[in-house]
Length: 124
Image (cartoon, rainbow, N blue to C red; front, side):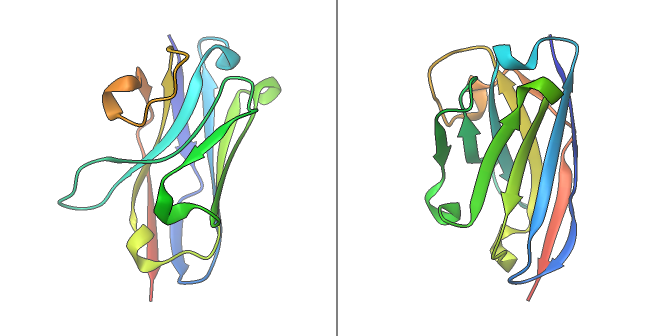
């Protein structure tokens, strides 16, 4: 089992940057695929980005490609989401998640463990 704690959210103007962090504890972080999801008010939780256990492969939702970068440091049990060129539509609660399965899957149900979320607000 793994526990996840996100940090790094906040209020930012459009065009700015934020870096979210996700610290894992309780189990070897390198055993899990990691993903970032977000949920805006009144909307479903949606996939943002994912990274394989080794960090070699990454996946992105179309609207964030070229702006967001997912990475991980298994030695530090930490994952990251670097968000550049932020837009008001990026406003949401951002969650990191860990999955035991090896196959990439963008669905919420594919992930087994979740953090508590961190709020990102982008003003225009």
